[in-house]
Length: 171
Image (cartoon, rainbow, N blue to C red; front, side, top):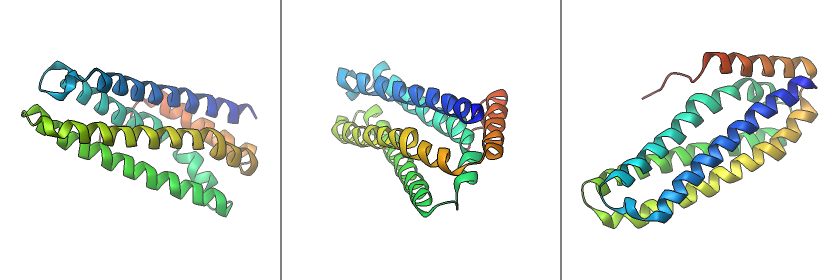
C-alpha cells in the first residue's frame, strides 16, 4: 500500500504546516502587541490569511478524491466526514468573525481584543481536534475501506495537486 502511505505522508506534512501556523498565531497573541493598531496587528491578520489560504487552496483540494472514495462506504465514516465538514465550516466562520473584529482593532477599538483571542483559541482547539481525527480515525477508515485501485487514484490526485500548486483563491 505504497499509494496509501505516500498519500498520508503528504497530508500529514500539511497537518504539520497547519499546526505551525496555529502556533505562530498563538505566539503573536501571547505577545499582546497586536491589541492596538500597528505591525503586530498586521502580522496577525497575515498569519490568519496564510492559514486560510493554505487550508483552502493547498490542503483541502488534496483530500477531495480521498473523501469521494470513502463517502458511502460505512455509516460511521460518513458521520465522521460530515462532522469534519461541519467543524471546518464553523472554523471558517470563526476566522471571518475575527477578520471583522481585527478591522475594529485596526481602527482603534481595543475592546474587541479579548473576543478575538477567545475566538482564535476556539479555532485552534477545533482545528487541532480535526487534524487529530484525520490522522487517526479517518486514516483508519481509509485503510480499512479503500481498495488499492482507489488508493492509486487518491495518490494520483494528490500528486496532480502538488504539481499544480495552490488552487486559485475564491474571494
